[in-house]
Image (cartoon, rainbow, N blue to C red; front, side, top):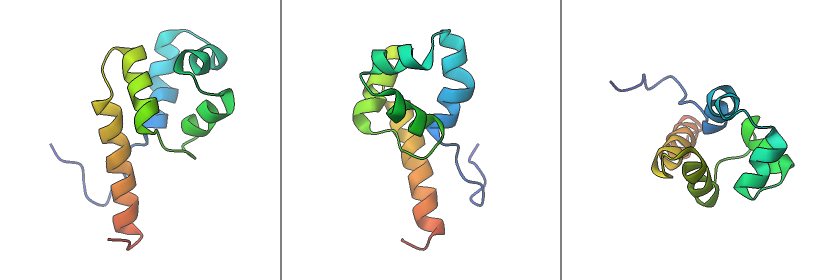
Amino acid sequence: MRPAPNRCPTHPGEILREDVLPALGKTKGEIAALLGISRQHLHDVLSESKPISPVVAVRIGKLCGNGPTLWNRMQSAYDEWHHINAGDI
C-alpha cells in the first residue's frame, strides 16, 4: 500500500519519540549516550527539527536491532516529499 502523495511521510523522529523511546524504558539522556550524540541533538531529532543522518541511522538501527535501512528510508521519504512539495524538483 502506497501512502497518499499529498500526505507528508512521518518524520523518523516522531517514530522514535512516540514508539521507540517509551518501549526502551530509558531516559533521553541515556538514549543520547547510547547513540553517541548530545541530548540536544536527540531533542532536535525528536522534535523533528533535524534529520536523522546516515551515521545516526546506523546507531539507531543497532540499538533497536532493525538496522539502518528503515531509518534511512523514512528520512529519505520525508525529505523527498518536502523537496517535491517545495518545488525543488
